[in-house]
Image (tube, rainbow, N blue to C red; front, side, top):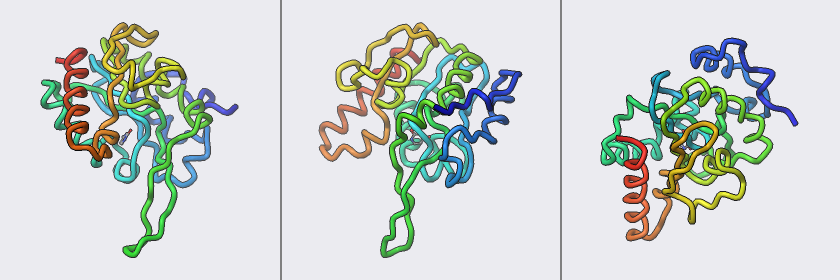
Amino acid sequence: ASTATSFLPTDRSLHSLANAAECCRACDLHQHATQTVFGRGPIDAKVVLVGEQPGDQEDIAGEPFIGPAGRLLNIVLEESGIARSDIYLTNVVKHFKFTQQETSRGKRRLHKKPDSREIFACRPWLEAELQSIKPQAIVCLGATSAQALFGRDFRITQQRGLVTATEWSKRTIATWHPAAVLRMPDETRRQQMRNQMVNDLQLVGG
Ligand code: URA
C-alpha cells in the first residue's frame, strides 16, 4: 500500500516536515482538499495532542482545531490549566475528507471518517512529528487517534484516561474527541464527558 514515506524530507525538523507535507500525494485526499493541514505548535512542546483529521474550517485556514471542536478544546484546555500556545496540535490524517451535500442553503461539505488506507498512508508524518518533538506526554483525542498509537484493539470507552507508555512517549493517554462531546445528545452525559476530558488532560499537562 502507498504511504507518505517517499514524501518525507531528509531533514526531519518540524519545519522541513511541514513544508514537505504540503506536496504529499500518498493517498487521494489531496485531490479535493484545499491544503495539507500539518501540526502546529512549539518544536519543543512537552505535550502533543493528536486529533483525527482536519474539518471544514481547518481545511480552509490550514490550521488544526480552529472550528467548533477546536473551540470546545480551547475551553477544556483552559479548565485543565494548559496553555494552547504551549502544546503541539496535530491529526492522524492531514487532509480533510468530505462528501458534498446539497441543502436549501447551497452545498455543504460533510466530514467523512478516514479509512484504514488513508490512516496508514498518512502515518509516517505523525511518527516523524512525534520523533522530532519527543514529547513528555501525548493525548489521543478520540478512537481513531487512540487506535493509531495504541493499536486497533484499543477501546476508548474502556481505556480512556489511562496513562500508558508507547514508543513515542512514556505518558500516552486517550480521551474523548471534542467533536464526540459536542455530538452527545444527552446533556448529563455530555457534561460528564467534558469533565472526563479535563481530568484526563490534567493527568498529563499542567
Ligand atoms: N477535528 C479533528 O480531529 N481535528 C481537527 O483539526 C479539527 C477537528
